[in-house]
Length: 432
Ligand code: URA
Image (cartoon, rainbow, N blue to C red; front, side, top):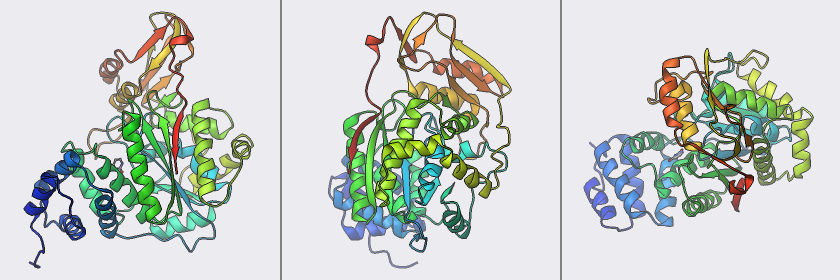
């Protein structure tokens, strides 16, 4: 056994008592945990102490650096195009990556979008794309580089070599009630993004019932912490704070969201999905040194330029862009019991319903149903008619309908007129 310079219990006690950890303590504890020298129960105690007592900016930066150092760093400097990436902190109906990656790539910027799968009520980009027949998420680093140079856009699974400390730590936090900590979320996200090697990064920090961050003040603190970590590491980073009180668009579920993304790439689709895609694309292009007016970005959705890149991006990973998308075997309409204007539709409830219908998983190794999810016929601000469908639930396994229906109890309000509708803008703030 090599001699260890610290004792895990001393590090835990220091954080428990509200002290700042030294650089050497942080480097050691992250490395020793990755090597299996610090036990799961010790890291579990330490992360709970961090959740309760916080970390200083200096500690967070060092912790992030230690997680980056636990694995490989990718290098895109050999590409002929600049790189820009986007990361969303996760929401319901958040299919933005699907139209966004090909849209930005159609302006000559490479988008290396290393993505994850859904867990709990939030959907995962890889699960959505896997509903396209033939499409595969796993690429080697060489395939990733070749596709970035050739097509310009890649959405694929992050390889096991990138920030392995985070992989282990995230799985531990998930089962020990230590996810909701600004230092731990910020270091988790930014260690992966900095190790990935993108030149520019746009963070979409979600706020509201369907997001990790339920209030604007905490979301702003998370955004500020991540922007500072990115800038200090030489990544041009900006954050948009965006609303997640209600689902994005009119679908939550894998193939349902791909279908809606195709509408956006065909120049249509729901306004909120289009507006957020365009807002994030404008930021990514500016960050990559290709500032582009918003009207020109919108035009690339309408005139088919982004759609052409989408087809190449899907085909390059074995997918058939023309194949029919899977459809669930069973459907159930949820109808309104009174007429008026929809004042509220809760994102968290819709996310849980989609998850219970089979769009998400409760264990990491579970398969998802491609066709399952929730179709939204009426969005907040739109008229509702008694007896007409508000939502349609989709699943292959109809025994799931009852639990999905239960998740939607109290999930919406109908008002007499539009005065009661929350008219908060989609983009709540921008931090650069
Ligand atoms: N996403 C991550 O990658 N890490 C977190 O801690 C939370 C969301």
